[in-house]
Amino acid sequence: MDMDPAEFVARNYPEARQGLAAAGRTDEDLDAMPAAQVVLLYVAMRYEQARDAGLKWIHVPYWMAEKPAELEQKRLADDVKQSEAARFPTGSRATRRSSRPTAGRPSTRRT
Image (cartoon, rainbow, N blue to C red; front, side, top):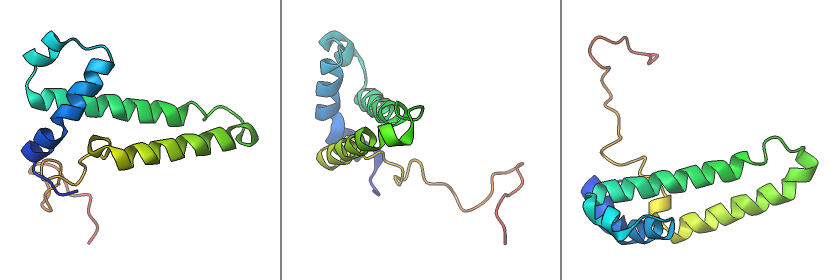
């Protein structure tokens, strides 16, 4: 997803506000936050939910966790299809790395 961060915030703000309100944030709290903060908190919340859903089966023997873990993966995939905010903006210009090494730090790239 190659999207300007401001565009990402504008497109996802209504869903993020509704999701945080459903999670217990008050309207006063949400009104006091910049739109980017609301979206970032919502994306972080969604990430933590997805992470926790996957990790809860890690200590269960495979033969017991196989079906529930598959159902959880399907639910998460469906959720990502329905919500743009669930697709973390990893390809956005804000997170894209430069092809040049950072000054003062040796390059880890192999030539």
